[in-house]
Length: 119
Image (cartoon, rainbow, N blue to C red; front, side):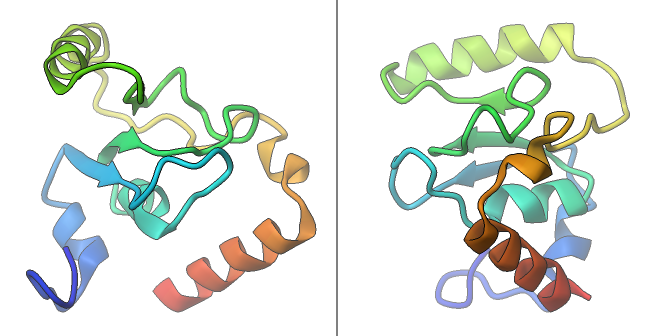
């Protein structure tokens, strides 16, 4: 979704219609996270994520994180295998326990701004 390609009135409502959503960052840089994974979570859509979200903050074990060193074919196969094992209709927590406290002040400020923009 994006204003330049396929504009939508409300991204969160659109994501609520889907069980999964692709959340690919513009670059794979350790620690670099944008609104994509957070929007997916708020929209109750499980993220299929490619990016540098810190593993000590984000719950990578219960969401599908693409390995940047694998081919797209390998990633698709891994996702399909993962999907078979993760059949629950509930969305697991986005952050690991205590993950929010591990973020530095600038990340907390940016997350707060993202949430405020949504509501």
